[in-house]
Every structure is written in structure tokens, then in C-alpha cells.
Amino acid sequence: MSAAALTAMQQGWQSCEGCGLLSRPVAGAHEGRCPRCDEELTFRKRASVQRTWAYLAAAAICYVPANVLPVLTTVTAGGRESDTILQGVVLLWSPTGWPLSLIVLFASIMIPSAKILALAYLLISVQRGSIENNEQRARLYRTVEFIGRWSMVDVFVDTFTAALVQLQPLMSVEPGPGLPFFAAVVVLTMLAVESFDPRFIWDAASANEVRYA
Amino acid sequence: MFNQPLSDPSLIACQHCDLLQRLPELEPGATARCPRCDKELWRRRVDSLDRTLALTLAAAVLYVIAQSMPMLGLTVIGREASTTVIGGAQQLWNDGRELVAALVLFTAVIAPALQIGFMLAVAVAARRDPAPRWVGALLRHHPTTRTWSMIEVMLIGVLVALIKIADYATVIPGLALFVLGALVFLLAAIQAAFDPHEVWNKIEWADADARHAALAAPTGATV
Image 1 (cartoon, chains in turn orange, blue):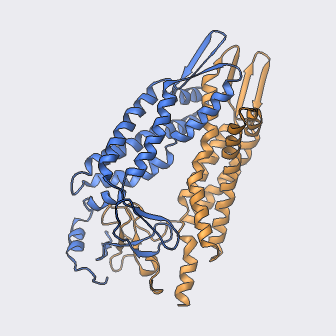
Image 2 (cartoon, chains in turn cyan, orange):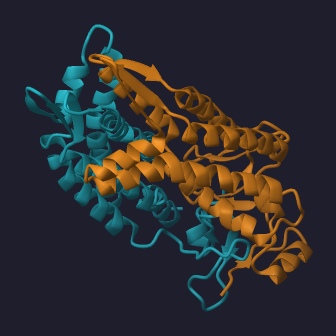
Image 3 (cartoon, one colour):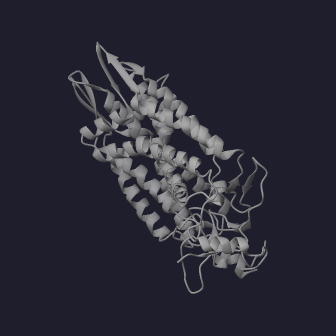
């Protein structure tokens, strides 16, 4: 591998995010469209770091009401009882139900917070031009990308519990005010992952290799 | 304005780290990975289009059954209730949680339908060579539908709901629950069988002249 031409961007070439074709902007033009699939081409995702920070900040703000406000309210003849996500995990804990309780604990509490922390770490390391732990950071990004969807579990649990338990006046279950915030955390972190450009992880290292080649 | 293709079509850049490299010719079943960041660049599948079409047709049938049959029911002291997937979203909407209802509808109903529909159209139309341009448009958006299609996540969610409700009522797992379970495996099998690289190579280019120029250029010419 020649050190002079490591990445497509250093060579002035653009690879298409849609179809993967590598192409070269025509002389004078900075950016163009993919000749194969017509996608707009850029060297890196547009305003990637800013957009990822924005989604991440919004997700972090929603994370608080998502965990403090109740996601389910149970109405019985005896009165109303509201549960937050964490209380739901505790309620589910039983000799037979503990594996599911653990799944909800992981999916609803650990994954969203781990995702926010991981993306913040990636963004900060990219902005500081870090060239360390590149393989680990790339793996971290792919793990976050892969695992993020599982936070939706609790949204589905609450949806179908509330849909089914409509036995008025005996007992009914309603979705609580925390649910929209929790759903927002899931969606916002997924959008943050999508707007982050993992190529930034390697750009600082590529620039150095060329400089010292 | 269209970019110009390179004269060597085997040159690619890794989508995750932008490293320039040559995509090797692979044996069927073999995988090429980026030497720097270990991202899978291409896995060559055997008989990709036929298998994808067969699996996708099966998935489409299961999808229709899963969406039209009750998924979960309960009985408690003589009263019965049951819900479909869409029914769950509907109840949420009626309870005043419109945004969450829309999200459930999108991730459990619309995105899976698009995922299966796009794949079906691609698997049928990509048999032509060159494949029509709209196949590329569908293929470009297919990863997005896959990201937001959450059948497997919903299935785990429904199982948790089932255990919760079983504390105070008799739960009746509906036919749709089992069909959804099978659908999760089919969707994974489609993912394993489909080779997007093969289809992209067949697609008619947006800039038709560039393709002819690229193919006519002598190999090894520098850009």
C-alpha cells in the first residue's frame, strides 16, 4: 500500500454511500453526483459532527423525563398506580421472569445511556484529532450501530400491555407521560448513529501518515 | 453534474474508513474485509437472486398473515380481549400518545412492508441485464428500511408483555405471534442470501455515456 494515496479523499475521489462506486469530480467542480446511481456525493457526511452532537444533546435531555416519568399507569377499582421503566424492571423480577427482567434492564436502561456515552466519546476523540485506539473506536461504532434498535423493546412492551389490558371497570392499563420521551431517546440516538461518519475516526491517522511518509 | 468513473472498476474505498483498495475477485461464499478497519466489503453469495426471491415471497406471505391475525389475547373471569399489531398502535393513538403510536406503526408495520416490498421488486427486476434504474433507487433505500424495521425487537417486547399480563389473566398467544417468529428467521435469511454488489454491477447507469467510456478505457490506465 503506497503511503502517498491512502484514502479516497486524499486522492480527491468520492465513494458513493448508496452504491459504493468510486468516482472523481470533474475538473473545477468540488462535488458532483454518482454516475451510476445518481446519489449526491460528498467526501464526508455533511455537517456530520454538528448534527450528531445535536441529536445526542436532544437525546440526553429526553433521557431524564424518560426515566423519571411513569411509562405505564394501571387503573383498578382500588386506584391508580404508575410505574417508571426501572419500576417495571423490578416488577418483572421473579423466579421465572428474571431473564426477561434482565433483557428490559439492558435494553431500556443500559443500552440508551451506553449509546449516548459511546457517541460522545467518539465525537470528542474525533474533534481532538485522536489517532489512538482506531480499531477499538471503529468496533465501538459498529457495536452501537448494531445494538441501538433493541432499546425499542420497552416501547413495544408498553404498547401491547396497554392495548390488551382494557378490562374496564375491572382493570385497565394506560401509557404514561414518560413513554414519548423514552421513544424520543431511542429515535434520536439512532439518528445520531446514522449521522456520524465513521471515516472521521481514521482521518487524523491518514493525515499523519502522509505527513511523515 | 456527474462525477467521472475511474478507469479501474475494481478500485474501491472502504465505506467505514475510506481506505483505497482493490476489491479482489472472490470465490462463491468468500468474504472480503477492509485490512484497516475490518469492515466487511463484500461477501459473494451463491445463486443470490433466486434464493432471495424465494425467501422474499415466503416472507411476504407470512407478513400478510402476521398483520391480519390476532397476535395476543387474554381471558379473565369470562371476559376476552385480543389485539393485532396494528390494533396495538391504534389503542395507543386513542390513548392520546399519537407520536409513539406513529413510531410503533412505522417500525412494526410500514418499515417491514417496505423492506420486503423493495427486496421483492429488486429480486424480480434485477434479473434483466442491464437492470432498470429504479432498481438502484430501491436498493439505495433498502438499508434504511432495514434499520427501522423492528419485527424481532417487537417480538421480544410482546413476550415480555405476555409474561407481565400472565400474572393476573390467562394469556392466549395468537397465530400471528408464531408467524412473526418465523418471519424473523426469514428476514435474516434474506439478508444472508442477497448480494447487493451483484445487482449494482447490473444496473443501468444514471450517466449512460460514462459507463461506456469506463468499459472502453484500457485497463491499467491511470486517472
